[in-house]
Length: 130
Image (cartoon, rainbow, N blue to C red; front, side, top):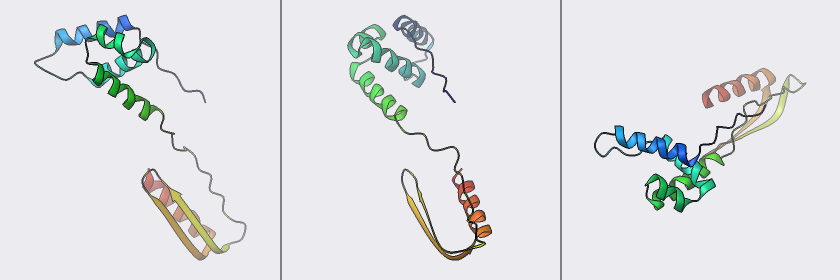
């Protein structure tokens, strides 16, 4: 299924958004994340120096925001569907289930487990992870 790409924003549009925000902001409110995201997108096409000058943002902050955006966009998406196939025999003499997440690993070893027990355990693990 193709993913919808977000529309690209021009330097002029980003500049107008920043100007509007500057006119409406109260005190020294920080630049909102959506404006930083727009600035990073523009800087990838137009260059950091030109973008920081046109949008009147600090070069180092823009460069850091670009790096953050690239790290989050390059993370692989976890699988949305995992097929669990029950074995043909009603009982399994030995079974090992290994699960790995971004920060942890889980290994479960079972002996003489029924297929229905494995299905129930798998369902509970998936539900607790969601």
